[in-house]
Image (cartoon, rainbow, N blue to C red; front, side, top):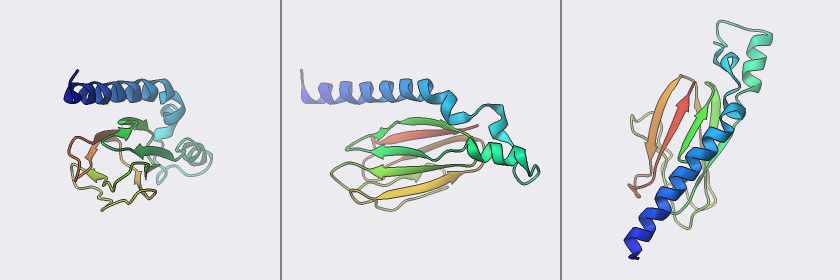
Length: 136
């Protein structure tokens, strides 16, 4: 097989695996319907329960991929991207909501997702590196 075909198959496998892992872990990440509590309008125990369900999440930046490529979280969750690759990467939202700038090897970048929605992002220097955060 050609190098290009092997690379494409490896990337496709990584995306499928990360999607399967995301689905398998989905119940742990979301915390159920109570995780969508509006903290500004609802204080007290409901707010504390919602905050407990917004456990910080990590995404690894490898050489040419984000792992997992798709992540579903509750509103209010802090997501941290950690550069485990061998070169600098960026985390840039397609709608310009956040931009990490260059993250060196071993570095990290965090963003808290407060509003429900789907957030697409990419690595500016490596256009094939794409990811998605779904906030419920």
